[in-house]
Image (cartoon, rainbow, N blue to C red; front, top):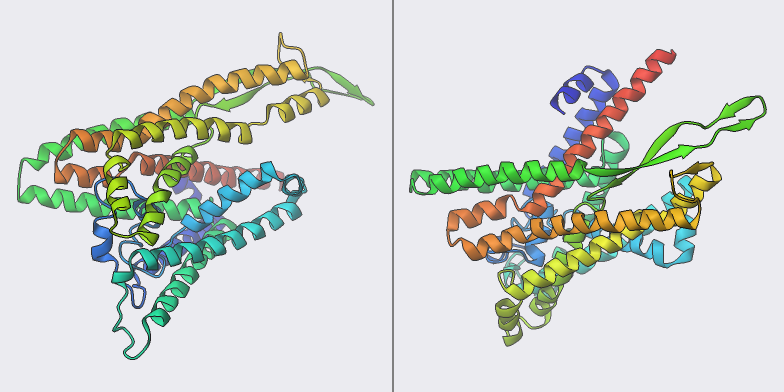
Length: 433
């Protein structure tokens, strides 16, 4: 990857795109450091982002500690990601949206507009949820003589505007830079927040040398998990396909052999985000409507991130969402129909319905192994918290969660592929010229 980056930097157009991407990412991190007027979440978020996964800790992870800092970009890319997921699911459920998604560039532009509208609504809802949940963190004396509800409304507007500004930054990176802008914003946020936590853990070694072994064991486990994620992310099953020779006019087409790649983990980290968001949503609702009540105590005791009920439900939901997402992203009926139209077939399998059933069978088996991998990866932090009672270890586990590792790996590989594709396109252009 570094070699590809160095070679790309030698090309003027790519160097310009890389610098634009870096500039916009720096602008995003500057926005994450600017405090939101009238809001101080440092003390309130300390208990929410430690000791496991919650709705707010997930938002804080995706925003790169912007939420715990109470910055103007505290919402991060979370509203846009949720909106994208909702629109993608509705595209499968609503026929009109499905037809719109197949109308080429114009259809994608309209779906992108609907996604931005949904992101605006979710940004407003999440901003209201933050202000209501952490109402004690709103500075009543920020504007003397101004009613508290006016200050809260101003905080909501600033947070909502910050969320939409993050969406704008991501879209500009996608258009003017290299790679997917939203993914790169998440990547930079996770790296920055993890770097801060790791530096704090290393600083604790000066006070107590016993923490040194904890850090060494953590680094070894981190490298092993990182390698496993990279290996699984690149693993795929290749189904061989042959195309019959076709004579059209005076030319002969087809006759070549190819394959259909079915990735072991085609859904990426989405099932983990789905399952975690669904399990932590009741906690957000309880914090808003019944703060410091018996319901909150009961939920933390029996459904907290360290409880066995949470671990079992998280594993089951990840398995369910992995199979559901695989059916959405890998349409075997459409693949079988296009293969039949182009004269392609899988050796030993009849074209048409039989091919579709055969691909579904393979997809289910591969998805099962991928879903088990995701469940194990997602449960590592909860199981580690139950087994380890050490403050430094807990800080390190929160710093580089397995969910964050998967996001980092997938974004890094995606960026490398985008950069390689840009270089290949320019090489072809120079060859043709």
